[in-house]
Length: 306
Ligand code: 13P
Ligand code: SF4
Image (tube, rainbow, N blue to C red; front, side, top):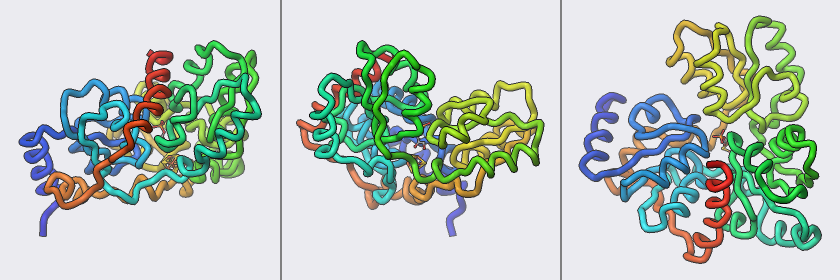
């Protein structure tokens, strides 16, 4: 039997030998984060990949993240470590639906959360991530915004930018949206000293009770740098776990046991090794016109967010 440490050592040797860059979203398991060249939120991953010199990437995350890397680096090989890792939110709306909605609202700028398929991005104007949404939407030279697909993130951005007019559709993350205000109230009662840090994919009533609202990296930074000793973490449970390793002298409590993203959790360390051995994963292949048209939307995000 191979141990975790032996598997990690094999991965590290192979990736060095083949000049492969391993990217891991912050929701990945600890043993994957430990072998990654870079770990971060959706925005940081896409920017890092765009600037990395490697010719092969392995994405430990979900499909739209691997597609984003491919769109930014079309001449490089990009593998999704586990081909079944999709994001249900990214699949909620398709190009036909949004094309029809846009036709009804020609004077609106269509802002797509990065949690969308490459195909859907081709008909949108600007991408945003949870860490950059407020800044980017603020920088758009139009006060009329069609924000898709996450109505919770859209509501959060709209509240920060009351000067703009938002049209939201009924989409969102089933994991974050499942957390109830009553659960947060119960956690606050149990840990009255704890700072509440939540992801803006949570519902507005949960977000309204938070001390801090931000992306996965934003939440981690707030918790690492804060002088407070206890934190209720309102995003995927792995973040509270990672933080507990990073800051052993503080205490981190997952806001709800519903905050478990099965898609983020299906990638395993052996999956990563199998990609390097050429017997696993899926190489991301996108039509040239999809890459070209989706890229406009991502380039605009990087331009407005930079
Ligand atoms: P971040 O942009 O914060 O990494 O979030 C991605 C995601 O899928 C959250 O559920
Ligand atoms: Fe998608 Fe939600 Fe999972 Fe993030 S937590 S990958 S938005 S399903």
